[in-house]
Length: 317
Image (cartoon, rainbow, N blue to C red; front, side):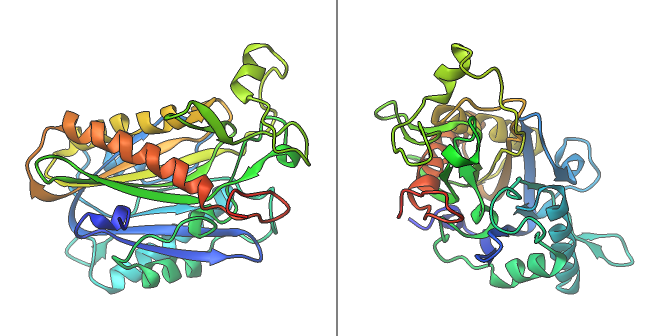
């Protein structure tokens, strides 16, 4: 399994700064892809989401960028557009090609060097690194500075990162997911209903608090820190229209709900993008059910592949 790149035509590239603990991830999808998005969090930072909504004049999406750096990281999208324009990729205006590059950011300024954020050059670097090889996971790209379990602050949090997974429907249709997990909540394995990464009892403990339970019992009234976001991209080689692709994004997001708790809070900027690229036939409900499962798998892989960084412990050591 290669992850998101199992879908033909999808390329993934990371740009990673392991010193500053930030980075960006670019998903390239050519010139014939249909895009969609579903926004569930309330602390979002994004660019060009309107281009994904039904009725927008641009029929296709050419790339999606996920970046750290909070709102400053949106600068990386300019580098993606710049290099794609040079390649002749984008919406043809008659004067030049304008690449449609929706994107979103996560907050990683609380780890590493907060004054260093993804730049245009980093966006270009991620495009140049894009490949159809197996997706690199863990502390890379937009997941370089990602953390989870921050209800009680960074001292009790755990490291997270990028995860990716894919599934094949019985008809042979491919569905895949990539996610950067930077949630305020805990990550739960739905197979065992146990927390595998999240808020710890103390800075030196590996025993979990159970953030959702703490909120229910008002041990803490609400997260005081709003720098949290889970950003996901799902892709399929099934041919879907714009309305169906937006629905696919919404259905896929159920995988995040299955694996992160609490989720979609006022302190999270959770967002799921969807890409339809190909001509296979399948119902959006079938594809959506598979996308939800693939995304749940990707969330678990994101924390299991994460290494300790910035003093925040990771499951990968």
